[in-house]
Structures are given as C-alpha cells and as structure tokens.
Amino acid sequence: MKGDHERMRGSESLITVACIQFEPRVGRKEENVAESVRLLHLAADRGARLCVMPELCNSGYLFNTRAEAFALSEEVPQGSTTQAWIEVARTRGLFIAAGIAERAGGRLYNSAVLVGPDGYVGTYRKMHLWYEEKLFFEPGDLGFPVFALPLGRVGMAICYDVWFPETMRLMAVQGADVICVPTNWVPMPAQPPDERPMAVYLCMAAAHSNAVYVAAADRVGTERGQLFLGRSVVVSPAGWPLAGPASADEPETIYADCNLAESRRMKTLNELNSIMQDRRTDFYDRTLGSRIVP
Image 1 (cartoon, rainbow, N blue to C red):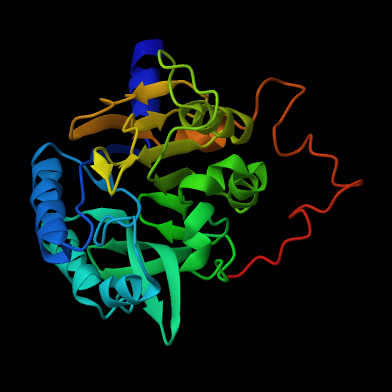
Image 2: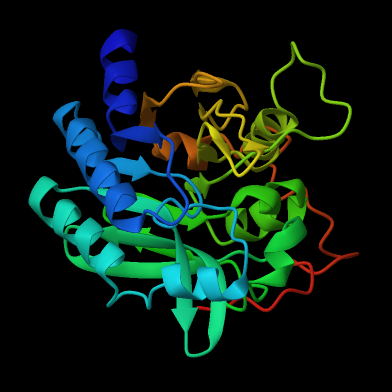
C-alpha cells in the first residue's frame, strides 16, 4: 500500500524539465534561433514539458558597442525570436524560458521570456547586471514575477541574479515551484580548476534554502575571448542535482523528472520547522522591502 501511495505522490505534478546547453554565436541571430528551435523539438521528442535555454541565446553575449547590441535586440513578444519560440511551444505543447536581448523603445534589457502552448506568458528583466552588461543594458524594472501555469508556478532569474539570495527568496515567498535560470556563467576569481563552478553551488543553496526546483541552462564555447563554463544543472528542492552538471565544453541537453508538488511539500522540514513560517518577519518585511509587481 505504501508503494502505491508513493507512486501516486510521484505523479502529482510530474513534468520533465530540460536545460538546453548550446553555443550561440554573437551577431548570428537567425542561426542561433534556428538552432534553438531544432533543439527544442529534440527536447519535446524526449518528453520535455518545460525547457530552459541560455542567457541572450538569440543574440550572443559579448557586444562591442551599444549599436551592435541594439541592432540584435527585439521587442517582446512581437519580435521574430519570441514568435519562433511561441510557434514551437504551440505545436509541441511546451513551456519555454529563454534569454533574449529585449528592446523597449530606446532602452535595452537583458531579459528572459516565458512562452507556452497558448502564446506569450511574461518577461523577466535581469535585475543585477554583470560587468560590461552595464554599458549596454538597463537594470531590470519588472521586479521578480512568478507566473501561474497549468504545470505549476514558475519564476525566472538570469545568471548573476543567483548571487543575490533575495532574488530566489522573493520568488519563493510568492509561491514559485520552479525557478528557471537562463545563464552565461564565466570563470570567477580563485575558481579551482577541478571544482564545479561556484554558480552550481549557489543554485544548490538557493534550491535548498527555498525548497524550490532550480533549472539553470548555461552556454558553452568561447566568444570574443571570453570562456563560458557550461555545467547546466537541474536541482531538487532538497538542494541536490537531479540532472547535471552537464559538460563544461560541449552542447548537451539534460533532463530531469520533477514533481513540482514536492516544492510545496518540502517547505515543511519536520513537525517543528517550516522554511517560510520560520522567517522572522517581525524583524524584517516578508518581501524584504521589495515592491512585488503582479
């Protein structure tokens, strides 16, 4: 009887999550989007329902000038990249979180777009800009939205955002079940050559301390002299990898079967402790003073 109960629990909100690690080429947007579409179809063939792709995967990452960044950017959702992903989502029944160079009037954002079988769902704009991103992009202004989907509640973060515990916590307190992280991880100072990237540990810590799934899709390769680390990973609400870390230097799609109901159940650690209820909101605001944008 216990075995039957466990099988039922395992299928409550069971989906296959895919992190699609590949090598976008800066400036070759049409080729990048075509490759992303090809890989999304392959992931759908493997049964994926939620797919995550890297940061700025339509444009490439290392821009020489703002003019180059602007030329490679698009409006969301009407731009050709988002529309291509919407078409794949519609025909294959997918939800897709992917990094995109977004143009809004004269402003540029390092963004992640979320689309599904019924079309455009929403956008996250990177809140914490890394290094020369500050020369081209505006800091995000949409807050930390969580999107209620038929499969569960989905948040998004981008790369350097994971270094800030507030990012993941603010989505967790809004009930996120899974946080998708399009990313372009680069070597950090004092990184031991035989260790996992620090970012993998940060994803593990964030998943554990918030009892959420974290699905981080990195890129590989070297672009204009900058090495990227790969090592995409899907982490359980307990903080341990379910898939990955992936290769450090090869394109690879990793898959994990995730019961999103576990992210809700595991917030209760035992009969006396709950990750959310134990927070000292008598000494700090529930949302850490952040403005939650609906």
